[in-house]
Length: 482
Image 1 (cartoon, rainbow, N blue to C red):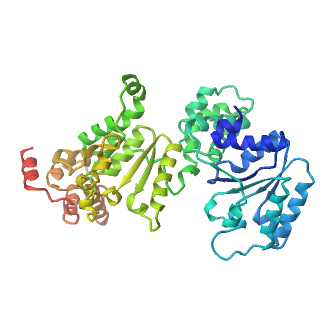
Image 2: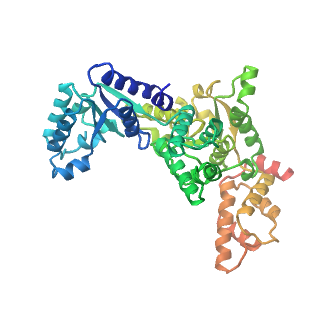
Image 3: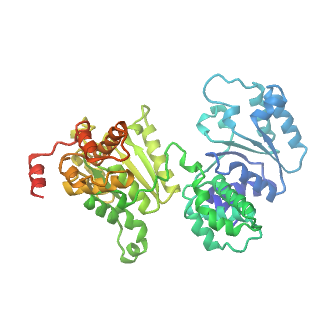
């Protein structure tokens, strides 16, 4: 398979076919709108295919045309087309078509520009490719001129591996220390990386190799790979869906919640860790998990821990933000979320305030019932959907003690602080409440110019920070027994 097909899948194969038909088989030149987020490699793949077919690219950039022709874009574009016509194999590449022909607002562009573009297409002698990050921002009369639209997305794990191998070989052509297995292993750490991110990562490795005076750079690449990857702001995680690599949250970073952690380990983490075992036994794991409980009990933290423990991306979604004013917009937003998750695989989607959009008819007005799963439409809770319910409630005295022990690792507490006593005095306090207590105690200690947080400061902080949950009589009696 060719580089475009390996690295861009079906979209790359379509582009390869268009170039093949245009320059090798004498078909009518293609007119393509190439869409994709920044860094996905739109310009690069066109340059690659042009090189393969010995074609010359004539690029139209709005800034360059405006500067060279004093704002007369139509004149500058017409000259560019004239130069392209003099070549036997040529491609006119318009970068950011939406800037030339914006859909909304008063257009400030040269009115003759559209006429030149339409004339170029009608001549049917030059291949035309236009790129855009926002195809919906292009004027409708111009967008309809393009007979084909190809969308470049975040590469799948397999596409990313091939892309990384290609980029690595372009930077280190003589390297023999890195095998295909090494590339696959490194690629598995580059969730949601697009072409530009991979190039930046390997460029950083090349710089490291120069600093360390290693000619082939392979050793430095192996040594610096983790450091380099943390210095990259991943382009594929900056779309509206906002998938991300969260700050690492491990199970041991979460105090208490043992039952919830065990349930999530079985339902979510094992899907990644023991995929072969599931396949061998012929069983399918749960498709989704519903975390429910009072606010501040650690539901988001648990979701991030699932992503960390399974080495997956984390895609947080606030359901109320999906409720759009126009018909069909919410459905499109949901579709984009799952498309992003698939491209960023493995990925954990965290849907917050689910009842805001999937509430049952009987409770459609009760949008704040985060601790009542019965408010969720029963069809969402059927097997194959969110078929496992995990309650995340107020921590017990023992769990509060465990939470305080975790918080102790992040702060400087006096050696004589009795966390067991604090745990007993904080009935109804959630993990977020306890964190607020320690934070307030730290401020009180700072005012007293103390070098450590002492018992007195923590107990004083309890008078400022109250519990979020009022325990029921049964819960209070149960805790007393414990």
